Amino acid sequence: MAAPQKILTNDDLSRMVDTNDQWIVERTGIKERRIAAPGQTASDLGLIAAREALERAGTKPEEVDLIIFATMSPDMPTPATACILQEKLGAKKAAAVDVQAACSGFIYGLSLARGAIVGGEASCVLLVAAEALSSFIDWKDRRTCVLFGDAAGAAVLKPASNGRGVLSTVLGADGAGARFLEIPAGGSREPASHETVDGKRHFLRMEGREIFKYGVRTMTQAVKDAVAKCGARMEDLALFIPHQANLRIISMVAESLKLPPEKLFLNVEKYGNTSAASVPVALHEAVLGGRVKSGDLVCMVAFGAGLTWGSAVVRW
Image (cartoon, rainbow, N blue to C red):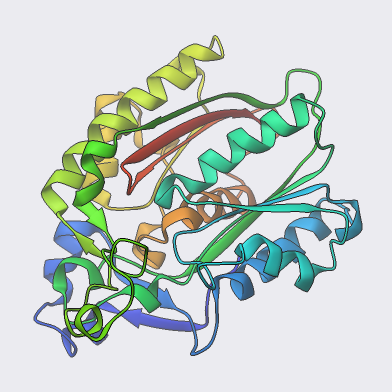
C-alpha cells in the first residue's frame, strides 16, 4: 500500500468548512484522511504500492504479463493510467488497461485478473488500485470533503493450487443510480468550459442518503452470493474486509450478516474513503497486523459510483 504523508484531520477541516470532529465521527467514523502532495498523481501512489507488491511476491517488473489499474481519479482522461505506470515500472512486456468501477474497482480488477489467469491470457497480473481523489473534491462541500482521501494498494496474482487463491467473485451494477455519485463535467457530455468550471461541475457530487441505502443492501447481498458461490458458509469466514466508506454502513452490513466484531476489519478512521484503494489498503494492514493467516477464508466487498458493487472470497 501507499498513503501520502499529509494528514488532514477533522479539526483541520473544521477550519475550512462548517463542520466539527464530533459531527464527522458520529456520522462516518472518520477521524483523518491522507491528502496527496501537489503534483502527486494516482500513478505516483500506485507506483509505490506496485513496487512493494512485486518485491513481496519476489517478482520482477519484466515478469508481469498484465497491469490492471483501478481508479476513478486517473492521471488524465487518456492514455490509461496503467500505461503510465507500466513505463514507470519498466514492465515492458505487460499489457495495460484501466478499470473504472469507482470504489468497487479493486474487486472488479480482481475478477478480471482471475479470468485472465484461468483463461491462459496471463500468468502474472499486477493489480493496482490508486486514487488521488483530493483533486476532485470541493473543499467547501461538507457532503463530500469530510469523506474522501488518497491512497493506493496493489497485489500480484499468479496461478494458485491446493484450493487457495480467489475462490469466487460476484459483480453487479445498476446504472439507474448513476446520478447519485458523479463528476458531471469533463467528459463528452459536458466538455470543460468556463461555465463548467465556474459551476464546480468538475468536482465529485453525492446524494448521501441514496448511496447509504444502496451500499447496505448491495454489499450485504454480494457477500452472501460470493460465500454461497464457493460453497462456504458465513461462519467459515475468518475475516470480513469491507469497503471503508462509512462506519455506519459497515456496521449495518456486518449486523445483517451476523458477523461478530472480531471478524470485522476497520481502518476507516485513519484514511476515510479512498475509493478503489480502500479494500487493498485494508487487506494489506490486516495481513501485516496478523489478522489474516495462511489457510484463512477472507471475504472482501465494496460498492461505489455507477452504481457498482462486488465481492470476492479468497483462501489465503
